Image (cartoon, rainbow, N blue to C red; front, side):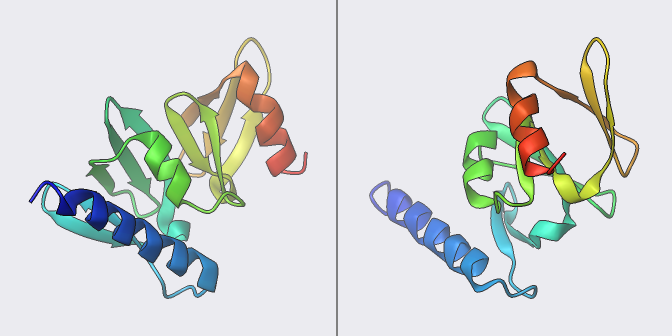
Length: 132
């Protein structure tokens, strides 16, 4: 059984890459959860937050999903034109940023009112992606 696990992971990754490359809005990304696979559209994901080797995916409908993948793995699956790693523990969908606060620490205010800290190292990348 252990031998098939890496093959299953490669298969899942290839399926996800194929979905992203088709640009079809009906296609979804599969995320492994404790109960099985959960399918989400990238545009239904507001932000992702790491929790050890797990990731919380916050959806635009207010639901929160715990996924058994690291934030780095999730970052590798989601489309880079919409998602930006703004902090060690946060990956955001730039479509749902409502405000970038300046000051002592850089804070993003998401459309749902959530505040997400932007690390100094990641700010330049965020500004570039958002065309600011």
